Amino acid sequence: MTCLYSLVMFTEKYMNVTVHRTSYDGRLKEFLRTNGGPWGASSVETAFTTWLNDVFGNDTINKWKNACYDEYCGLIQSIKAKIHSLRLSYDKTDEERFRVTSLIDYIRMSTHNKTTHVERMKLKENVEIVHDKLRVPTQVVRSWFDEPINKGIRHIADVLAMSTMNDVDTIILVGEFAECPLVQETVQEAFRNKRIVTPSEPSCAVLWGAVLFGHQCSPMWKEYFK
Image 1: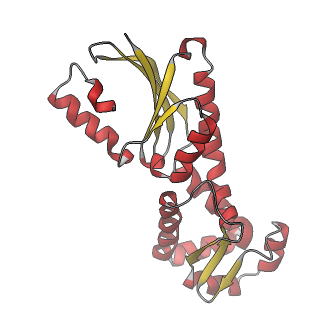
Image 2: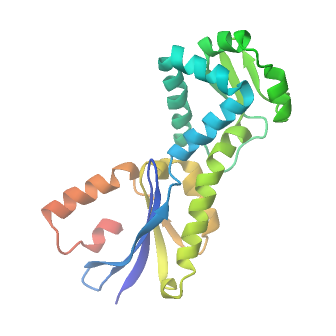
Image 3: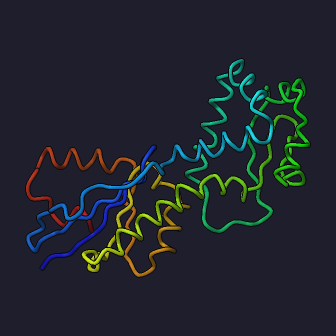
């Protein structure tokens, strides 16, 4: 008896899908080679920086970034930290807060009118700077995750739609981006008829696999995937 499962890797830069077959004795064989696209966690950073430039202006953000690079990097890291907390369900009144102490000075000095930019994005009543914190509605933060997750979901669906993939019954999520509850829950929602498996510390899955393979390259036993 053999079975098929799909291994989906949501990494820092890419989302890749590969399909493997396990035989009756537990041996593992690649059934579909790795394929995917640039829909990893770094896409969230790109979406956020684009949004930041739209709200406060490229000149303001570039001047701030060049003069206060440490704080800029800290802001980017705080965005990445949201990977571990965002979920599919949330309260419409929820908001996320980010420290932007020195950015405030550059906004004040800028020739760009902050209110105009916010109005243009129809976020005037929702996005605020209070003291040294940038307050952003959770639904806006969620929007920075939409493109990579949605493109990843569509790609998985395209793979599963292949006639040779009818027997795929399990999807295993690994990689850094797979640690995001929003990714896990969206995949679960999109593929309700599949068994979705997310191992503990999915970002370490490749490392653990390399270590296991180094100690016992053949066969790879089924017990590893229970």
